Length: 158
Image (cartoon, rainbow, N blue to C red; front, side, top):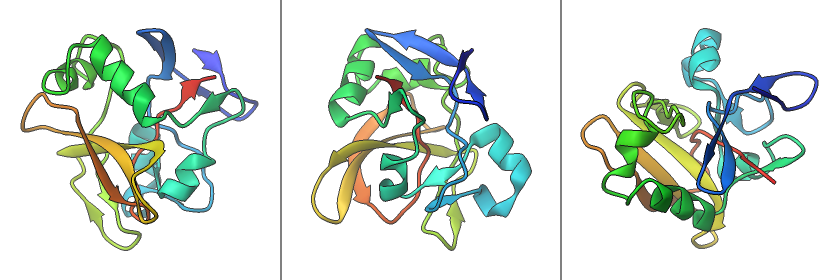
């Protein structure tokens, strides 16, 4: 584990030429949510962040990965169609991605069946790129989504 400030520590993993968090960020900041408001779930799955919150959530010395950095991670593990298998909690990469679901700020969706991570890269004024995976296949898919929804965050070392 590497220290990320005085308040918390996160496990890390080296994939490709980057050091990534090996667990979801769990920093209580404005624009972040605990799944269904259940504190116990935050301990396992971390918090969910709107895109604006995600851009400011990573501790000093870390940053929200760009779409290019996520693409590099996927390439280091093969391709978009197979990387999910290695990134999931049962996978060989050590990334330990969990199905943390997401929220629109009022309703929570797909805990234990879908997980998604914001990138720092905008698609347009209302959308940003994010990467998601499900328990249905081994893909780790890039797409864009409304910035007001909240997904998980993984930070990458500067």
